[in-house]
Length: 317
Image 1 (cartoon, rainbow, N blue to C red):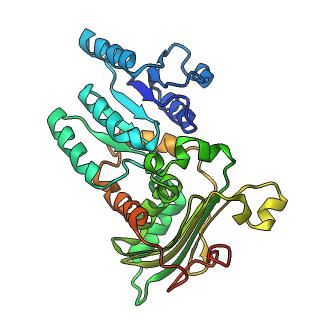
Image 2 (spheres, rainbow, N blue to C red):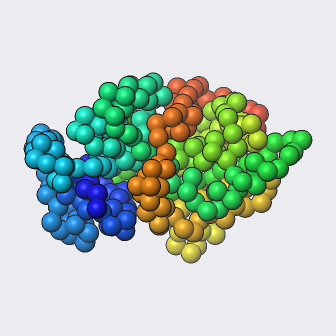
Image 3 (cartoon, rainbow, N blue to C red):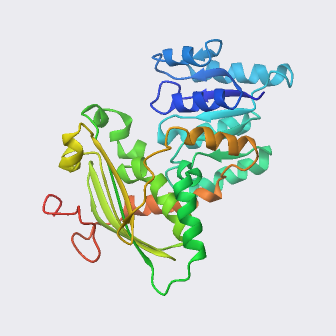
């Protein structure tokens, strides 16, 4: 049984990590969050020690590490705000533990280089949650693409609308310096999936970027991709709104819908199983997606030019 600590226990994604730790037969021994709204811990690990101050959490993990090998923490799971991931991964490695970090791994590709150095210094490893890489439908699509020999590239449309309320823009997620902006915060795992399925990135153009929406064009070895991301409920198609849904997710390949909406709930468990078996995704696997969103963040939008997504309409012009 491996021992885990968790940073960011009050966040949205933390319960999935707790579930994955429990489902894989391991134990959460310590958790940290400056917000003490963490009653969810009782549903999984009521005996876990909890801290609201980083310094006390650091001291506790160090005490466990120095006591004996039976008590030291093996993994630190990181669910903190995006801009803190880099620092918390460094802390995990220097504490003698491997890290398991939520997406986005970091905000800029050069941060990966520093983490690689700390891996060398400590002998510990960074593992990342790239959950779509373990989704059966995405794995099947990748295998199909790799086997095919086509004269032309696949035509792909990626649409992801996950509406958020007013709270979103009052939280760190609405601060581009902390979240990296919409493409980083809600899109990075989709961009990783596109690279995973369709090969190396060859072109990256931005059509539109605002606080609530982003749209652009990406070209890979085996695909031309029009993408659209939004947190605005006005973008959810009427058919979904009529049945009470506030989210719309679609990937079409050559106008054929890829059904991958099911199976999302256990992807963190699958990710943990792979990590614990020594098959986790490391730092380098993240480089293309992080470089993609970093370039999107810095790019000047070109407007309605070239191959733009069909959702890019008069509302965004």
